[in-house]
Length: 181
Image (tube, rainbow, N blue to C red; front, side, top):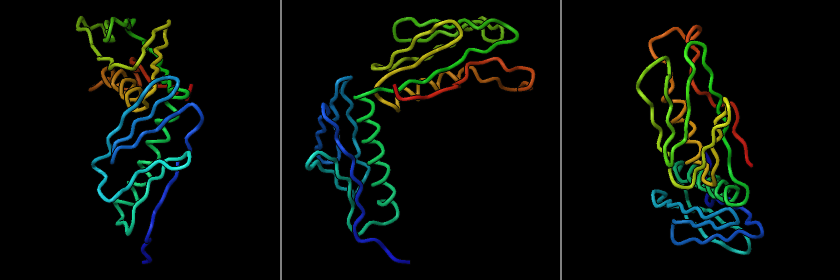
């Protein structure tokens, strides 16, 4: 087995975006907002900004550091895409038995009448994420890919049917598209 001496990944910084690196903490500012991320768990990895790009590197890396270099570069790239364009997840409300009602109130999504239950299921919306309901579609948008995908997954999760035949009880809210705006 041949071991690498130096692993490096570079991410280009487009015009209109500023990236600030403080140790293993990264702040990305762009036209749509600001995202801050701490990578202090990445021991043995070095982050720096030089001549219009973010450089993520590790010297004499073990397998963990090689994986971390690629992962951190991907996270920084997603942060840059988020502050320039943003992310969108689309979900579809599907019901056969009881009509599901979905409402957005301030920082919460309220899902009622799921399988005829009186109980209202609640999903918290973190700051920086926008949720809109139009007909049978629920649209989740924001600049932080992790927050947007987490909210979409949480909506899908609270309407998961348990202990029933999935072929008959298809009721729920399902993710059908994720895209860059």
